[in-house]
Image (cartoon, rainbow, N blue to C red; front, side, top):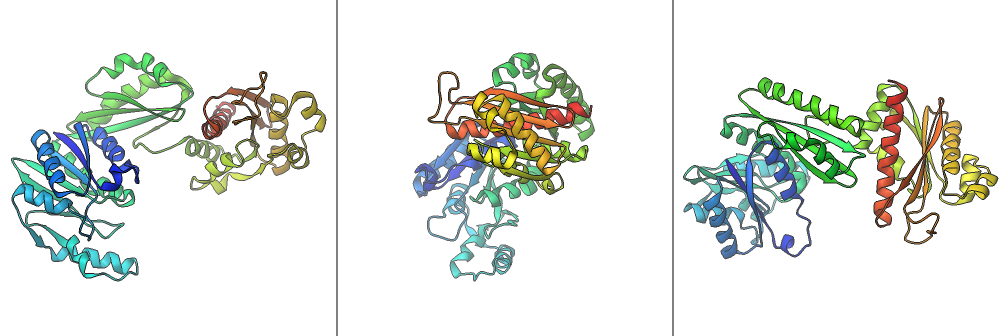
Length: 416
């Protein structure tokens, strides 16, 4: 089975909206083991959309659209698909009921043009939209090919895909497709690839890497007749990947979620530890990232934003002499900040960050990107020196990730 993504909307072509839908659908298709060779983006134009449909259907079994299911005149996705299939749109009372229920739920008044969202070809299978007014649809196009219509807003598209489209595609393939995701921090993509090249060449299970800021994620996917067979195929792959990469793997999951913050909170909760933060260049980002995780209130006690030197002395008790002798951006100050936060808030572990995010302020001895982290527990207090690159935002975001990773590793090491 081959699939093609067709994103509809002039706003995408003009760059007014970032096309995150294509990224999401691509990842889910890959996880299902469904081949994808092409993607298209087309504006709200009848002729060009018709051409895009015909091209996609000439080379793919499944065409997945996003956008253009609204009630306005420029929402043409369903109408042009029907034209290509040589069919007419008819009114679906059950679709109208879905739409009415959503409007009632949102405490909004339904206008007459919303009935356009209840028009589909007669042989359409409706997909429930639990987060918006536009139902999705699976439309047979002849010769065993289908078009799957999804709404444009990601908050509507993503749950619809997971709840309705994934089961449909899995059933069509006749196989069980199971994926396992490895989240990695502290090793670059090229090094990960060099250690796993032979595994990445396997056909089934497949192993594929992709990257985000400072991180690498691996996806292992097995295709089998049963879920148990698929799991049995993935288990030795997981064992081998863990052996080769070691503790740079911070999470292994059955979905592509998770984060360093989630793993950090899970470690704290597992060992019943509390944490505090002391931040300079990150200005509260470490703490904010931690408390985004549900359940963080059980382990995150609080934090200090000590941006100026005087705040480090007043709030954390960092001696002025230490700052004068070693510089505010130093291992000594990072350690003192972490110790101060741990002692003030009576927590099990504290993490601090001090550094130069730029663009100015760097010197030959301490260039922009110089960062020191402090980790303090009842057993030890230590500093970690980092030399980061990029703009101000990148340096601060990477500092947060390194800080969370240090906390995770310290907890695991002390409780091994």
